[in-house]
Length: 212
Image 1 (tube, helix red, strand yellow):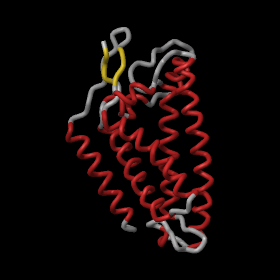
Image 2 (tube, helix red, strand yellow):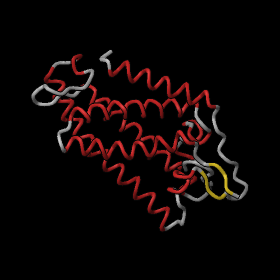
Image 3 (cartoon, rainbow, N blue to C red):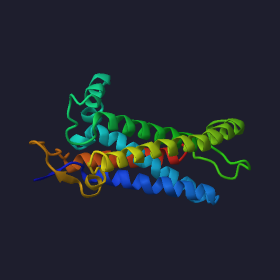
């Protein structure tokens, strides 16, 4: 029997981030900075939404559900605990790290400026040009770190697919998979929770993008 694993907002966030990271790289390489800045602001909105959704979203999207301590992680690695639906304890570390790194990357971009001072993040005027240039360099360096973490994330997914015969991609596309040993399905959040999270993320993003 197929059970629900991921709600639609969580899946949309995941795949939109995949697309946006690729577009952010491409626009930076092609020096399309107007579009790069706009896409960065969209990424900011997505990160903020995911943080809010991690507090009030569906059961498998909530941080309180999947973020575990060292004991739970060791028990999972030792085969003494089952993963259950959603992120397993080890995968949760990857998710939190990626989200944190995206937040840092976006935050740096908000204050960054190019060499000529023609293109700047919406908060760059709050700091000196020299400081803004330093943060722009950190912004570039952090993207390389992000790519490494994404590579590890993809490698883990392939490991589960090939070695453990566990397809983690299909549920993130369709939302569900076959239940195992009486697993309970994901409990969706009320629609107004989504409206609240999306509205809060959009409002905060527009406020930040306006330069505060």
